[in-house]
Image (tube, rainbow, N blue to C red):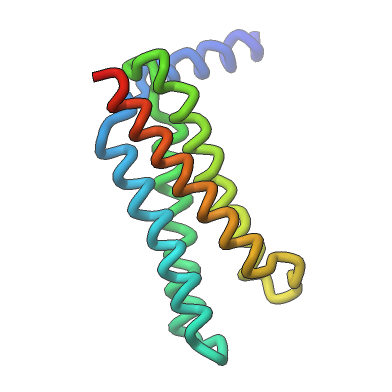
Length: 138
């Protein structure tokens, strides 16, 4: 019975998920860009001020919320050729959020500037591929 209820909940959640829209993409894109801006701001300040930590923390939270909404969106309305690029874009967005969170941990020195930079470069490339795949279906 418990498995049936979980299965029913999953079906209901999926059935009522909002479709992927232009707003879904632009919101996530804007918030990941905000992460990049917070990273640049953090690099400009020599000492880690409370303002910088607050800005970075807020950018991470906003990006996580935008990612969650995008991830939970129903991609059935996307053309078949676009779906793969959408999921690659989501993956690269998640990588940016994950690396940024790890970079903010005071005890974590393994996340270097190069790792963050390459993460953002992959995210930009994935966004371009997603937009090109949409344009190719028109």
